Image (cartoon, rainbow, N blue to C red; front, top):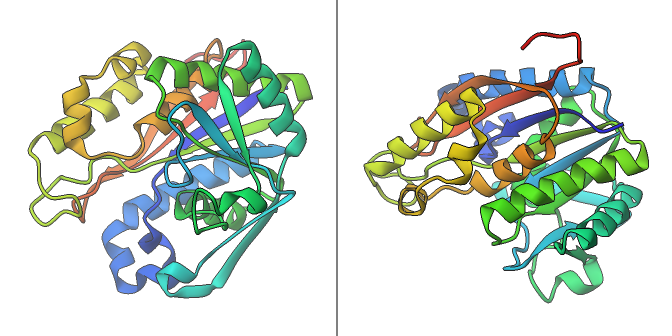
Amino acid sequence: MSIVIAGISPHPPLIIPEIGGREIAEVRRTVEALKKLSAEVAAARPETVIIITPHGPVFRDAVAVRAEEELQGDFSAFRAPGIKLTAKNDTELLRAAAEEGKKENLGMVLLKKKGLSAFSDETALDHGATVPLYYLQEAGTAGRIMVITFAMLPYRDLFRFGGVLQRAAAATGRKVALVASGDLSHRLEVGAPAGYDPRGKEFDQKLVQSLQDYDVEKILSMDRELVSRAGECGLRSFVILLGSLSGLKAKPEILSYEGPFGVGYLVASFRILKNEEEE
């Protein structure tokens, strides 16, 4: 098997009802879209969901992968310690990805709790992983997961790493869903978390349109100054996703986009078309 569905998820903790409270009304479109995406993933019945997060330990030249047998996370950092998430790690898929990565000269760092403290005080899954996982499990996705943090590699190398994930799925015979977690510009308005930059909105518009058009080359060659000024955290996750779909016939759908708190939240799905299906 291979990649059976893919999607883009934002990860603001306030879209978790127990955390957002009344503020969740401000992101209603995002919540509804994320529920729809999660239902689509569940309907595809993947055996494993790969989640790509921007907020785990990040290395310059190697992708980081959580390697514990069981992965856990909660929202104690966001005043909701009672929400706990657990899932079995797909260590077979992880090993297959590491082998495929060697063939492409793309390194992977396997992180276990014993060594993780050298890079971070946080051994639990970060909110870049737990927010989409919350909605995926709520929708009924109960299989294994694999959690990756992208590297600070060139975009085209990250795109190639997406192909590594696709081939690892095929090598293990897994039905795999891939969810790229990331927010768009953090600088959409005055008072935004990273300050205001007028080019933040320009970045979001160009990225959303390019994804809708499925124009991979335009995304891979985005102006670096524009990306930097946008203050985004999701582009590298999305590039890996696009690489994982390379050679497949995929149909993108923008389910929602909004930026009510000065941060762009995008939800999108990529349905894999069968040979007889039309785009």
